[in-house]
Image 1 (tube, rainbow, N blue to C red):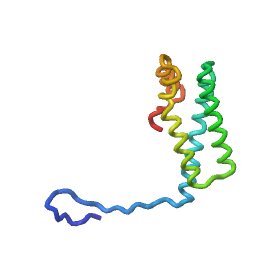
Image 2: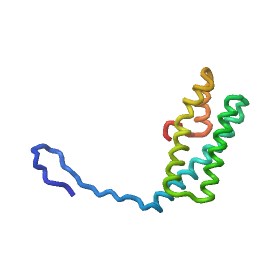
Image 3: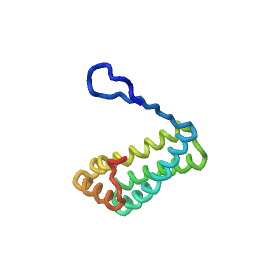
Length: 127
């Protein structure tokens, strides 16, 4: 479990083997993540549509296209690389949402981002 300390310090070195997931496990994890992210995106789209703002309508249209593309890929089946890339993109989209809102609506964006987080029950920064 630990190696002999020969350097004269009091730090114990632990060796731990890391079990890498199989490709099937990676694909299942990525698909599971996507299935968790999609309802968040659905609610986000609904909240953005309620704002009746032209700039946010364009952003929402882009988000809808991403969600549709993701659902189509899930239905068709995708390889590990594609699913991992899609999870990364979807998480990044949520993480960047406050910055996007600030750039589109400089005065209102920060408060809108906080309001959306509150209504969704999430923190964009966790993604």
